Image (cartoon, rainbow, N blue to C red; front, side):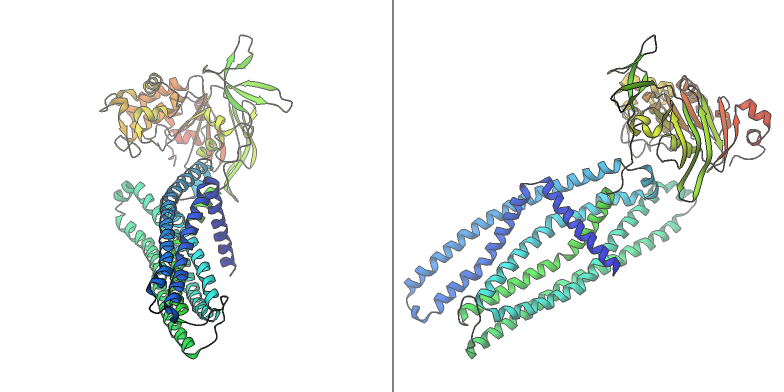
Length: 634
């Protein structure tokens, strides 16, 4: 019961939020569309009134044989009804066109809002959610929201107006017969609640199952090579069958409930139609008194229009019931979309920014509007003054503790001192905490205890975008985007010229293979650069970092995917790239860290040894055994 209450509150909140967004996006068009829907609905009630008047004229014994008189009475009614229908037709055309425009515009803005919000989420969110499930928000969930906004909401508004209008006319003509109709509608509502409730439960499950299935498929697509290498196809098929079976069960039950509801409601309406006809005939034959707001007695002129109104009344109740599955799916999709929108964005309380700097002979720093190749930290103070600190690349971690999840500490009292221009290497087994340290320097996660200072400034005081702009990073897993090779290199700095991108490629050693591609730097890359080798992709990633020209570089297994011959070529470029910069290197190949100023050996989140290569070799500790092959790094 508690879960039902929570779900109902979430549904109500989602509905309010959808309407709030619609009004916010289209403050004029939405009310205009609503007026057109209401007008067309009111017009659909009028035929019952006109029918009653025409039957009353024809049923009047005094009018028998007076065809001219009858025609003069009926003709204006028919002309009026035709005019009203023409106006209604125009209003329907208007709200259909406006509805299509508003729906697509609403989805366009909702997708933009969702994507823009996603860009501000912390890395932790993407580490803890399947990417396929996140993609499902932009495809399946958005599609269900489209159905809700374009179809269900207008249909509900139209049906509500018609039901209210028809009920008012019914009460005007006969309260007794209206009560019979309401009794039948009450039965319809009980059935709708019972059957529709089951439908709603399984439609919500269906949305979650779809996200789960898409997440699994996306994961399998990314791992196809691994699956085939280990002959894991059969197991993957079995795992997918389980997820697919779950989706099948939820979808089947959801649609079974939804599909049976319409026929049940329709047949209850047909039975009610017959009951009204029989009761109306009995009332006329028995001469029963009619209780009504109009004061009219029971007659054919009341019973026949009443039968049509009953059909119209129950038809619109049926129309509402038919929208239940669309509403439930739409609200389920909306809840998932709003859940993504409502994720807490990455907290950024920084106020120190990175600026281009000009430094005179006396060492005075001033801000430059053009790129100078020198950087400074712009530090505003409470008294309104500004101070500038030259970016030198002095990075220090002091007694840092960190946990990804509470209670499972990853780093224990880690201290790292990287002076400007130093090359600091981290070595150790997988899971020792090497990459975690670089994640903390990038401020992807917040530390539990200790301090991280950058040029003497606590990194929490530096705006994260500026902090990351000062850090170049080359990851073990390379991501290339759809576009040309030149576009992918320029991704490191969007205002870089073609000449600067080519120079960066030469620096990294990528220029040689790029110039041999079919279209050189204009070669189109798709599917994460699937038409390139892993080593070539990594070279482009290194060139991307080079064109950014950052003061601090982080190389996380940057050459792990490159063969020994290519590594020798890249290493020369890397050495040039690292000149004058503070560099953090993570590597399993100890030959790549041999010339580092400081080498730190990590084990279970602790630094157990530190020093240069010769010092650590002389100590004959863990590093010595790793380097000499006394035991494997892993």
